[in-house]
Image 1: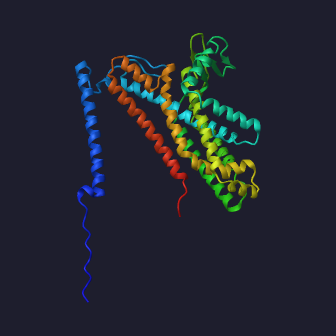
Image 2 (image 1 turned 180 degrees about the vertical axis):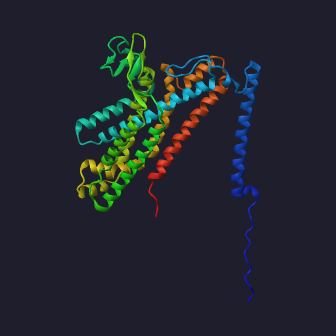
Image 3 (image 1 turned 135 degrees about the vertical axis):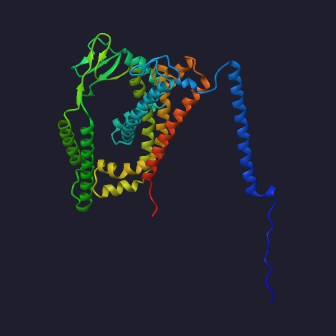
Length: 391
């Protein structure tokens, strides 16, 4: 018998090869994008040179020519240092806003599913009222309609000598450094490590024996006692600073300007209304069998929510909540409308002082890109930590 002749499949021509066509289309698209960007760049640089506007970034080393309230920045410092102060203000609003909006959003989202009619309807009224109003209107309302309407600084704004509230802002007690912090920080680190170890020990004991772990009570007591001992041993390196008011200003304490407070409150209220809906939807996405199984085990309503429902709901809600964190950070640029010195306002003032607008806007975009990538990185790490691992 003669051996069977193998069948040889002819390759399709290049203009019909799917793989070749795919790479060709991608290369052509990238070429078109590169040509468009090159044309736009040439048009921009040509117009700037025709108008006598410099195209480098040396303006960042020039004196800013303006001061930034509630900071140590002086007008003699350069523009880049002013942008760093603006970035710090943006980061402060974003960090506090994310924490407070998450806490408030979770509470309101759970309240939206409450069996109590009044609680459920109140939460629904909050969500539907806040998320359907532009955040800029909320910011201006809190700034011009509430905070600037507070009593003047010299009109009884001092409350029990502990904090001061007026149309100049809120001043709270703060801690001032009165000595070296080295010994105190080392003692604090050791105490925190001991508290964490005790929490782990109580958790493992609970898993082994079933007795109440009370890890928060144990770890909190150790941490508090360790802080007191570290404070006394290190020679009391921190002191309490109380606000001292006068007719024109206050001294001491930690001051929050009306602009900062209005921006923070508005962003928290607005973003929390969106987070509440995410939390509500995530809770409803958890199978009802999980709640029924928890009830069959004798868990209370709070225990069922704390140990069964919310951990699974958070696994669902992390990606959309990350988007809300990004929106909150970018919406902080609306502080320019009320005079808060965040990055956008600092950039606008630097342009009005003679800085080149294209480079200044590009630097501003890079700052916001850095903030967005950092938030996306953190949320992705949390999402990866919470996802169910396949065995």
